[in-house]
Image (cartoon, rainbow, N blue to C red; front, side, top):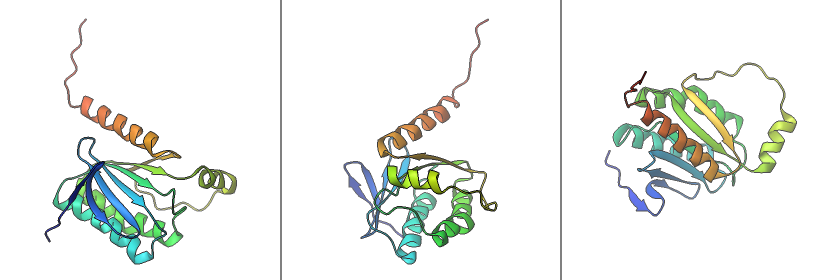
Length: 161
């Protein structure tokens, strides 16, 4: 499957629809999913599968930013699909830990804190590492610092005693 991509000011547009934009920042190696409208279940899956196609066919990506500020929380079925189907496919493609910054509104954050209740254990994936933000710039800064930390680990350490 041949995929055409558009270069946008903030990076390469991997996918764009009524519901979402997926943008790849090649300098920072961050794939962003920016939700523009509450998606149908099929549009939700299509967006993530388009991102997965990019990761499989063009470039493995370990840094992600998902911006939920416009749409609010995901539906339980959407979260279940991510946990039970998508994350495994993503891990098969990149074979490394995946860092994801999730951005939502202050009200969404407060609702999560206020309504938090211990629930039964969710099938979590150890290779998926999440951090939560109310500002996309802060989220991207965190991902950039993760990348710098990964890049630094590639250099040999010399000890001067």
